[in-house]
Length: 445
Image (cartoon, rainbow, N blue to C red; front, side, top):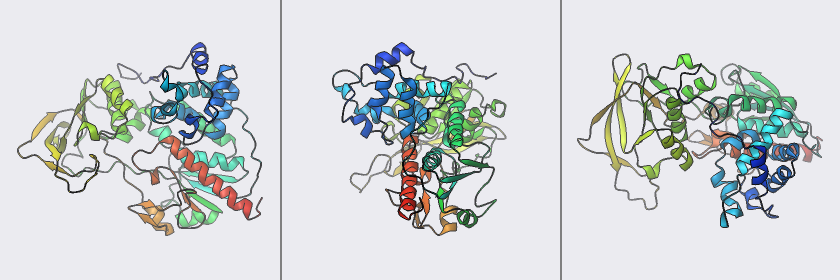
């Protein structure tokens, strides 16, 4: 039984069949459709929508999965308003076609009725590829390589595959069952998964590299870094990602937030953690951010969702200590402001800050959730001699091959803050296609 007043059921209800058909008929089926060029994976949007309008949902699902093996996840969490729907020509005379929700109609049908048979690739190559990590980029690369006939082995440190989709997306946006189903489809293509293997600890990077013709590194990002302030060790302090993972796994007994919760950070993960706290029964949830509303990293729709859920925001606030003896009792804060900047054009998010004098204040709370970004891994790049800058490997932007031949890096380990699942999927496809081209060119067909 979930101790919540709102529940963790999916927030967005699926379209009914009649709604989907009516919405599909609104599409102009553009020949040179801008929605396709604004989808990083290039899904043939008009074609799959036409299939829905004609009542051919299995065909619609085949079109989607042919370009994006994680089409079910992307139907739920893609920022469609800035991608496909943002480019829809119907915005000029009405409103955008609800492409994301239509994609969900088709992919949900596939989940319930069976995964469609995808078109066979015309070229078959023989390469043995190892992939470290099993998040969206890794799954996309693995599926694409298998469709070309490559042998693919994935090494995953955790108990389940899926990375962010399995552990990091709140249940009411994407149920765990969706991520698990997508992993099963990749597995059904013949990809081998090895769980509980932490490369770099259980086996060396050199050893894994030596086992395969090609190595793809898709390790994502590391844990939320410590703030370095007093009180972080107190009971009631949570790492946002760990909290979300506990809710995804249904481990509610391990969560004790109390009624007043403070979230430090204002990105999409902070919104997810804050709304989780509300759904777990907290009555007062406040996001504290050291900058103003204009510099907030969260998407606009995430911000609106948080406010709709009753989450409060407090801007220009820096937490300098977490208060309490054994359990969190509050936070000590100071007010911040933008410092004068001599760098023209610098974004609000990157301008230096100053702390206002005599601006100290305290906020009582029962729990603190830290959502201030994630650390980066450096061990793969150091172990394999890969060129890097600030723990981000240097890659060919078209192929994602690193400075070490036949070693690729994809996914969040490369990402700027605005990284998305759909862009990770495309990176995986591009890396896979470069590997296929290389081995086809070398005659290993």
